[in-house]
Amino acid sequence: MNFKSGTTVLSWSLALLLLATLFPGAAMAHDATRQRTVLFGGLDVAATPPSLDDTWEWDGSNWQPCLP
Image (tube, rainbow, N blue to C red):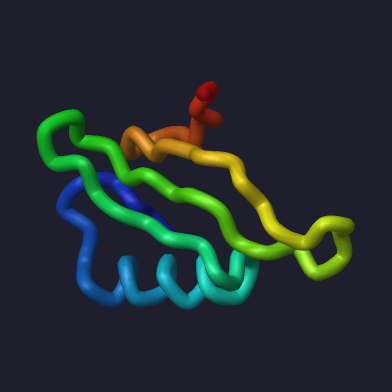
């Protein structure tokens, strides 16, 4: 799957399905000004506590963790 700018609706649909499967409860939004997609949170049912409170950004090529 290619998630660079200009992707198809199908690619984004697959990305959202993958997100929902791997990170249930996570939220994702696009920052058009900075051209970044931001991912926050989710659940890791194998972890204690199960909630994830990390934030990641996608720049079209790479995921980078965001520091508080």
